[in-house]
Image 1: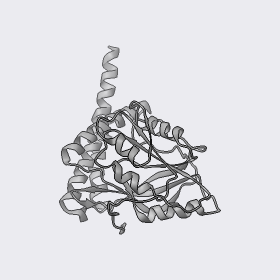
Image 2: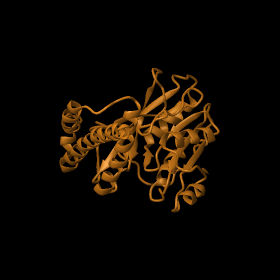
Image 3: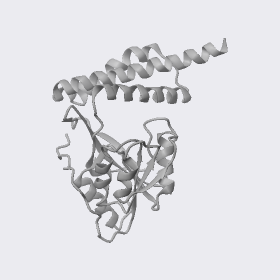
Image 4: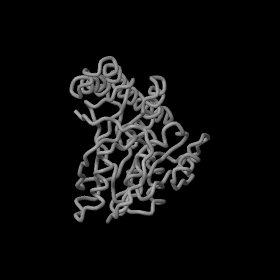
Length: 273
C-alpha cells in the first residue's frame, strides 16, 4: 500500500539548482481549466520546460497555461498518442515527462526527479512511477498503477495506439522512481460512465486492428474475473462502497469492450453480404 499523502494545492517554484539533464514536461489538454494549474505547478520544481498541447479548448485552459509560463501549442485533436508525440516534437529537451491535466506530482517524486537530474550515472532511458486515482474522496492506494512517464525521445516514441498509450519501450529496461502521481480523475459517476464508453470504443477498435475477434468464453469469463481482481486481489474491498462500485464499473468496462468488439466484427461481416 502506498502511504504518502496527496500534496496540498499550493504554488510551486522552479528549482534553481544546476542540473546535468534537462526535462520537458508535456501535458495534452482540452477544456481543463479546473485542474491544469495544479498539474503545471506540480511539475515546476523539476521541469526545465513545460509544454501544453491544446486540442482546441473553449475555456480558460490556454490562458492559465500561458500565465504559468508554459509553451502552448494548438494541435487539432488527433488522438492521444499523436498529441503526445506532437508534444515531444515541440519539446526542447530529450527527456520527456508525461503528465495529464488532471494529475499532480507529489513532493517525493519531484525530489526523485531532481536527484536523477543531478546523478552522474544514466541507469535507463525510461522510468516508471506509481499513479493513484480517487473515487468519492477516497484514494485507491491499494491498487496503484505503474505507468512509464519519463523517457528519452531519442530512444522511444509513444506507441501508435488508440488508447492506453505510452512510450514504446518494448524489452528495454524501465526503472521505477519513488513517489506518486495523484490522479484527480473522478468527477462523478455519470462522467466516469461517459469516459468508459469512449475508452471502450477505442479499446475495441484497437483490439480489432490487432486481429482479435469476439469470443464467447472471453465475454463470459473476463468481466467477473475483472471484478474479483479489482475487489479482492487489489484490495478494493477495503475501500467500502467506493471500492465495490469501482470494481463493478471495471467489470462493466470489460463487458462493454467485448460486446463492442462483437459489434465491430458483426458490422464488418454485414458489409460483405
